[in-house]
Image 1 (cartoon, helix red, strand yellow):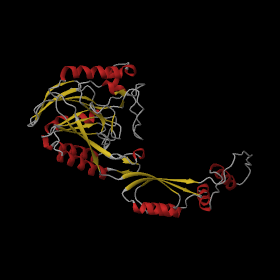
Image 2 (cartoon, one colour; image 1 turned 90 degrees about the vertical axis):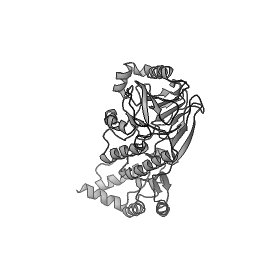
Image 3 (tube, helix red, strand yellow; image 1 turned 45 degrees about the vertical axis):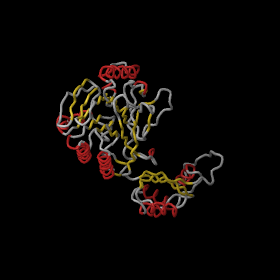
Image 4 (tube, rainbow, N blue to C red; image 1 turned 180 degrees about the vertical axis):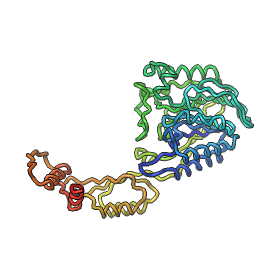
Length: 401
């Protein structure tokens, strides 16, 4: 069978003042197209479906329309779990109606999905944190261990008071109990979770810039050796770059976000994962590139002319722009830069330090005119750079307002 794994959609997310909704519509269309072209049998979405607990109407509409299209109106099962940006109750709310379309929404850890059937597939077995599916076109069952994100309150509720010391042990034991009870080599065995996971002893993986903390008390990391040996593929969400923190034989995959959502992701290629799986055999997976959306770019220039030329030649980007110069930008220069491109998220002027030598201290004469005091202060804070006429006019305008 073929499975599509995606995560971290963050529908409704903005980049500073810029909406990303149009890009998200395009990339959702792309994911649906890949699912159809690859003729996948099932879809796993590993959390952070929305960017906040109260998504806007447009983001919610895009989410439900995309799930319905992915499900082929009930022919293809779609399983989506909540992440640390999602409200579990919001994710759970439409579940009875969603099931009619072949969509299984799981908001809380240890949720138990009651068995049900559609015309094309059915849940034939379930327990807290586990479902087993039978798809009519597939001659074997599919077992899925599922662990949505749990915040501190939910961790206490589900895993007890000693969560800091116990979370790795408890998760490992619960997963093992489920795998030992339900997962043998007569079916495909999967795990999907929204967790901050890594190999034991490996270099710490960087979380996305601006990502809400996913630290779990002092135990801020779940180790991949907690995954039961029966699991053939682990579909993770949370980290926004594609990576396998497992092995070739037992992949543990962060599939990546579908778009670059912060400048820490500048230059990243985004993917979904297409898995080929059958009982008792090593799975294979293929990274499928997602091409929609504007690239995020960090650029540094030393002249206005070069800046404007690059901006004009690269319109389909969002930019964090640093401009090094010997004096502060004038209003006309700023206007020219912003008129050259509609995707400048940050403009960072950086004045070269031409006159700064050894740091010196001197007595300040507070009886001086305030203009002189401001000029001295500005010069001391900016490497000897004098305040220009435009800046002084602005200072006096504020002073006399």
